[in-house]
Structure formats: C-alpha cells, structure tokens
Image (tube, rainbow, N blue to C red; front, side, top):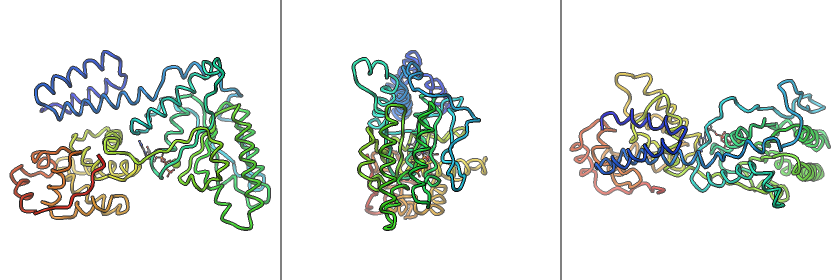
Length: 400
Ligand SMILES: Nc1ncnc2c1ncn2[C@@H]1O[C@H](COP(=O)(O)OP(=O)(O)OP(=O)(O)O)[C@@H](O)[C@H]1O
Ligand SMILES: [Mg+2]
C-alpha cells in the first residue's frame, strides 16, 4: 500500500484520544484491509488499537475526584526543602507535575493492568473508605536498570497531579553517627506536611551501609527510622520506593511496602511499541520497528531508546540516501557491545545469507523474502539465493 505510512500516522494521531467513534473507524479500516489480504498493514493497525487500549487502561477516569483527599499544604517553587545539617546539602528535589501529561512508559498487558488497577484504587479512595478498606499507600517498584521504573513513578504522580519529593539518597546518608536517621526523619516530616508523593529512588543505597561491619549499630538505627517513618506516613500520603536490587533491602523494609511491582524486561511486542514511541518525528516502516525489536531481545527500554536515537541520526545525516538499517544496527552493536544480545550480535556480523535465513525463519518477525529485500536494499531473488547458499543455521532464540 503506497500511502499506508500516512494513513497509519493519521490513525495514530486520532487514537491519541481514542473515542468510541475513532476506534470504530480504525477497526473498520483494519477489517477492510484484512479482507483484501493486506494482513501486514492490518496488523500494524491492530497494534495501534492495542496500544491505545493500554493507555486507556492505565488512566482510569476517577482520579480527579480523589485528588483533594491527599492531605497537606501545597508545595510551591519557593518552599525550602530540608538539608543535611553537616553539609547543608538538600535532602530532596521537588518535581512539579508537568503541564502536559507525559506519555506512560510501555509495559506488557499484565504489568499495565496491574498499574491501571493501582491508579484506579488511588482514584477511588472515598469509595474504598465507604466499605472500610484502604488503597495501598506504599509501592515498591523493582527491576533491572533502564526498564522505566523512575519514569513510571513520575508518570503515576503526574496522573494524580501531585508534586514528587525525590529523595537524594546519597545526601541522606551521612558519615556522622545518628545523622542519617535524623535526615530520614526530617525528610519524612517534610513529606508528611505537604501534599506530595515521596519518591525514594535507588534507595537500596541505604542498604549498602550493611556492608560495613563498623556500621552495625548505625544500620539498625537507620532501618528502624525507615520502618517507623514508613509506618507513620502510611496514613498520610503515597510513598514510592525504587530499587534495582530488592534483595539488598532489609526484609522488614521490603515487607513494609504493600505493593511490590516487578518491572520485567520488555517482550517483543512491547519493544516494537517502545521503538515506535521514540521514533517521532521520524516515521519508520513497520518492518524496521520489528527488526529493531528483534535485535534488542533482552534489552531494556533505555537501550531501545538509544538505538532509536542512532537510527534517527542515520536518517538525518543522509537524507537522500539513508544508511541501510542493517548497517545502523551493526554500527550500534559495535559502539554498544554490551547492549545487544550476543547471539543477535553474532548474526549481524555473520554471513549475510545466515542472517537473512534467521530473519526469514523467525515467526515473531513474520518477514517474507520481499520484506528482507526491502530492508537490505536487494530484490527477493537475491535474498533467496543468499539464503540457499548459507546452509543450515542455528537461529537465535525468539522470545515469542
Ligand atoms: N518500558 C519503557 N517504556 C518507555 N520508555 C522506557 C521504558 N523503559 C525505559 N524507558 C526509557 O529509558 C530511559 C530510562 O528509564 P528510567 O530512568 O525510568 O529507567 P529506570 O528503570 O529508572 O533505570 P535505573 O534503574 O537505571 O534508574 C527513559 O528515557 C525512559 O523513557
Ligand atoms: Mg531510575
């Protein structure tokens, strides 16, 4: 379909506000295309519809109603945050809700639904109270670096239109006996006074104190301070903890969090959507997004974002004759050797026929010889010839 990229962009723009009428028309178009045998482009529209569903699931409508229920004074840009008494370093930064609601990070359906239901509870505090139950006020988000944890916490707070008090964990930890516990107390007292989300990002750093045998007494004091403060804050406001190393946390601290949300590595479909989300203003063909997702198996959102940046640069610097996608992937894999799965990396630099065969056989890609030809700038009979010359290949494992 010649002008499909424009149609697709139109549908995506329309689905930013997925009213039932918009959805219905996009579904009609998808069904008509399927009927005409245009399965690939119909699939692209299905992905758009799924992505639209996901963001709707994530944003329940009742949040506004309960905003007033988070008590406290209003933080202003002039409010002074508490500081460490010895160093005068601030113990936190304040992030105010952005004027334009940010895009949510992208996760698989299970995680998205869990996040959606959490937001729904935060949006229904009154209704919950009427039946004698409470929404959880403490949430621990954990997972590998670069999987979108901080972005999720900031996005959740933006949905509630609450400012975020981002604790500077390194600043909290003091070499003076007793000061760390006091800093924690001061930070929580400040958070409790104002309407805000308290964000303890990368807060396993506190647990690292335990590595030092000199610090046994101090770590006890610090953990006790954390436990007491987490408990007393629970009645007052939301606390989000983030860690890459949940097991480093003291088990008692870990248990204090009513919600423990693990952020997984993105699967193939999510990787396609993450690549798509970072692409504008560049429009990439669907096959390119899929190939990027394929090569980033085992990578995080941050790594996909970096690869998309490389892709966009390659497009921008060679406008008339953009660099071939495979060359861009090779360039990225060379400059970011730790970021690409070794098996996929090996394929990129293998005999071209071996690479084409792996691409043509992977069901998650669903590529025809023609698709591969389009990507590689060759015709399909050349692709076929390369593949038949390549012999048997051991394929990289797909995660679909
Ligand atoms: N699932 C995702 N969807 C969209 N973007 C993502 C996703 N995961 C990561 N990113 C992007 O990667 C970058 C890093 O994300 P973020 O800082 O939230 O990761 P993190 O999990 O907090 O990492 P760290 O543990 O290193 O602090 C951001 O620019 C974010 O937009
Ligand atoms: Mg982070």
